[in-house]
Length: 192
Image (cartoon, rainbow, N blue to C red):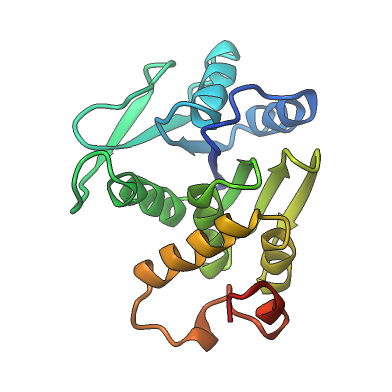
């Protein structure tokens, strides 16, 4: 069964018509949805799904209680081996959602490192993502390394550096040649 991971930037708090149309398709097809509990895109997704009275949703959170669970859906609490409130603390739930999902639907502001890491995690497991790039007002499909590189080119310079650092932390023993972020055509952006 298809399971869609919804996620995105905390700076995106409203869904445009195209995003809502794609959510409507998810609802019509009765796909299972996993979504985080953060403000921004997570909360916007939740608000829309709650307004549709959609039930096939599970909210993931790190810690004891979700920050947002607008539809009072089932909540999966993910144990995190990190200090509460840190990037790594919240990344634990993202990692769990990426494992659970079969595809991703992300809203990205061109800067959110967490959103890009979710796309990367899904890609590593050979799972496709549809990414709405707000700065470009368009959708990109990420199915493999070349698509990932195309998306990464749209990131702000400091975001690319932070993405690289976070990936290295998540996969510290992997050689650079195995990390999709580091391809020969990325030399020019300083990530190789």
